[in-house]
Length: 582
Image 1 (cartoon, rainbow, N blue to C red):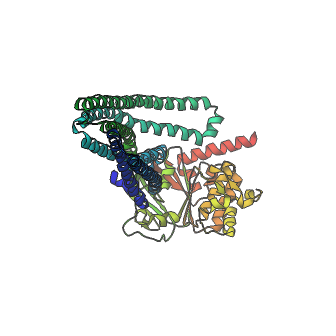
Image 2 (image 1 turned 30 degrees about the vertical axis):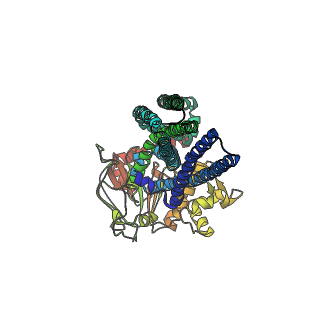
Image 3 (image 1 turned 60 degrees about the vertical axis):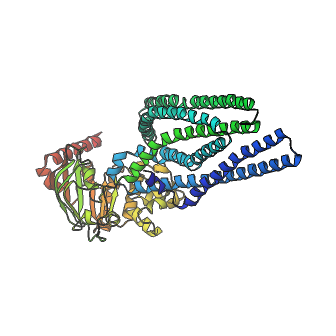
């Protein structure tokens, strides 16, 4: 885990090395100042000239300035190193997520990935900052101060060796209680983020059903659970400060008592006033070092779980990878499902798709009809390898999709999914997701095919109109047509519309299909729809039921031979007739 995280330091290695170097110099200088002060006090006690006082005063002033400069430089390089480390860590995580298949994302969940990219990275960044600065300073200070104390009075320095184990035992006991709670805390963070994400993304649904109070109550419940656990763990960690204070004051009390006894009892022969003063200073330095170590201990305790969660993402391997020698050309838009089976998880009891045998010629228009849960979307997601088949074989252009270069395959398969997503930016920016080098003429052409040009031209800024995040400033039908235009701009060999015209009226739907038939005849078109009218002119219509093919044929053939299709058609034509009458 440490090796994996350390690889994110990269170009900030210099800053990471310079930070502890300047910290070490700062500590050495801080430990030498009490030693110089001790010599000055001893000289004053014995009677000395003012020149000696000035000499020691100037020496301590120079050491203090040098220590201050080293501290400032260590802080500067530490800030650069920790911020750079966090930047690289977020970058590696984000790049890794971009490489994930849908199955990998399903495994972690969106809310959990967001928590790992934000809260967990911040925790690890804070721990890294402490490790390269405070975690170096404290042991150095502890060792140097202890060494100087032993040099001046070995017997008095034994007090430190007796107190340190007491503190160490206390910290270990606190860690043993706190660590299990931290493990559960981050899972509850994920749950809280999931609640926020659901509420924000579905705010229109929440308001339309007047469910604000319910959502607030749900959020408060998750927040209260998180607060309770945090309060519990903070109560445990709160013992850290009193244990530290106890050790500090006991040490100073013992040093003062036994030191004073040695000074008075020996007449300053074993220990003089200057030595005792320095011993008190070193006591404070040693105890403050231990206090800082306890703070590091708390931060590292919390960040260890964050680091594990980050490494889980970095170590996870995408379930979909390029083959060793990938095919880099899709010859045509033919599609062949040969005994295909599919399940979302290896542990699933039942396949989502079972024994799918479908053969589609390049350039054909295929309609897919089926009830909710019939696995229509699951079927089409296999074509661009958003998921891999569990069994059987799926070919595009006569080649198994698993043998294609992923970028090559997906560039030739355009999918307009059920959930249409537009990004903040102009209409042109959104369209250029299909082809970043597309000309204005090409964009206008595909928008005309998707029946989007008409409403775009009515906007004051036309194709430069700004789209809000998620496309909130355009209607559902407009959003669908823009997404279809974006998909067409890829000039794909296969175009898949997953219920992508549900928000447009039947007349516009018919115009889109007519434009497809005349303008892109060589592109294989797969249309998933709820309305029979959207697919009745297709070359072949596939009826799915429970993840199996229930029937394949033309509109006329299915009306004669397929009960499901006949029932849907009768239901929809009856509804249409009733609407016309009313």
